[in-house]
Image (tube, rainbow, N blue to C red; front, side, top):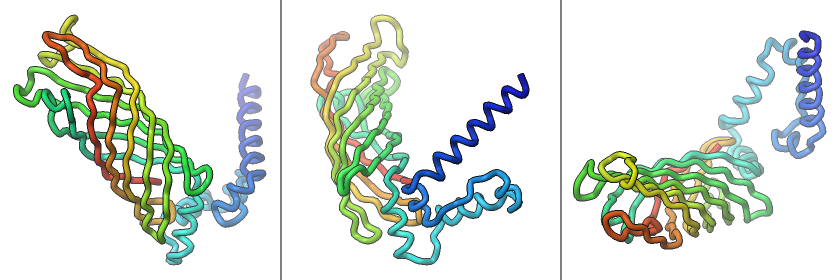
Length: 237
């Protein structure tokens, strides 16, 4: 069993090395062909990859090279920290609240890219704190157009979204007091990123979200498909 396990590990390392070595985009992305062998890493005291990771993420001292390196990155992850602003029926029961999110961007054909994102916000009752709570969750897929100008990268984006909106009365999820709704919608917005390192940028964005209206009934008719806006500080890497 031990030999079989070691064999699987060895095959996994072999296929990983072959895939990386045979990917020209990967080699070009980091500016040079790299040695991925475990033996080479061992001979260099385990510092070979560590040094490269540092040089990729920190400024190299060559501003133009750093900007070019960042713009050549086709796939980026990011986190969002900002606010959620309710409209419509949401505004009757909820108030401005913190919003958290994550996003992934793949620049397929410049200036267009694909985006995948998740956002979450929870708000207490606007007039009677503690009497109810509204939770909004959004999963969105869309496209983004970016227009780089040196370090400054303005963009616009449009997304189709799936919303999971949950309304709790009395701060609990007792039967009959809680209603969860799933609906579709569309989002549109704009923003900018500013390159601060070879693989890091920060920025701001603002979006308007319009879920398809759906009325539900608790003690009265309440629209859990109400529109809202979000604004966020972005960290991309």
